Length: 96
Image (cartoon, rainbow, N blue to C red; front, side, top):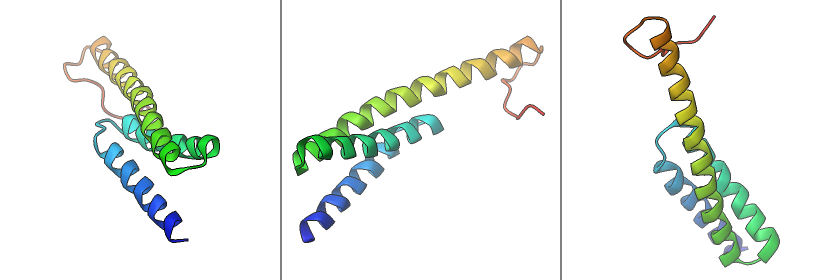
């Protein structure tokens, strides 16, 4: 029981540390989600602490890159939408 508590605490700390390094909202969610998914998958495959931590690290990196790309795509789309409408500043608000 004590070992599971330490593994859970370590995995939660790793997720928070990885999510703190991300900059955009999709990048943060991607990092956290990838780390959790990677930890679950690593534990299912390996069944030990090393595979869980390794899966969290690999999943966090992959999720970070996917989220970063989504943030870049959203920024480009909003920036060019503002330029097309003749505005100097990028479009920052919702469309109703």
